[in-house]
Image (cartoon, rainbow, N blue to C red; front, side, top):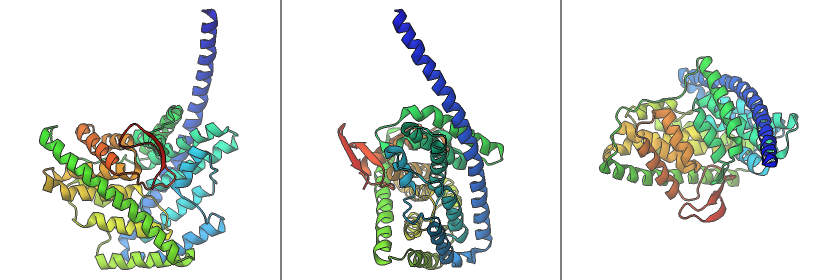
Length: 419
């Protein structure tokens, strides 16, 4: 008995020491990335405000693209893999250069300033992951702890920018290898995310949240409509992923020179913007998402956003894919909802969750995101649309470095790369 007790005390003592060390590190990472995230948020907001005040700035988008390619060339990061590099850093301990942080920071601001169609949370993942990973190497953490450090930075970066700390934690742990979550990272990720999010709130940056005008009670008729919406969201998410992949491949195969590629891509986005006759699809489109959740969206909006986002990021501009997926899902759900018996506002919220889940293969993070964005009422419907979209979206995804460990159809180990 005494031997077991001593062994328990030894293990407990080590656990307390590890807890204290990781708590201290996570608070530091959360505070640091909170400051970086606040600066990133404010610059993006300022860039968006200036672009909306002077809409013809979009004419300079091709030249902004040349600047981005030049920056990556000067810092010898021409082969940057973006968010895929961060995922590889956690799963395979691939080294992430600190240079990625200032590059993604500046290039995302440039993209938004001149009207490229891109998000910001994917950039925040790269920003947080690269900074935290570099600090981990600097303080000589071992290989396993470096992976936790990277997830810690991802959680803090996402939480600081979007204000959804719990979804940020689960997403950072779930997106790497679908079906396997590193629970050892939970305490550091939670502490870092709450610290970063709390610091943003203290600095006057309100968490992202939407008010859904009407949520029906859980009933058989509602379940049928949500099932149908989940099926269609899975289809839209596949279209989104294929558009991102195919347009990027077409750019790279037809235009080998990265300077020419991004310049031509910028010109195409400019021409399409003037052809469509609206600036709704430039930048992240948070205002359009808010209108969709309020029950107002154009029928073709989700298709234009998919096309312009793929044309922007495929050409080499920088930013994230997550907010565009919110845009696509919210506008799609808003338009479709009344046709299938769902209130437009509620269907927009469901569509946002369903498409996000389909493109990221992260059902748990998607459900938690709904709670943080829309509140817990309607949780059963949110869980249903995410479950259906996850199951039927196949093995497509935004991130080629993502692994899916178990079949979506049966409890079978497959260890499959995302298509």
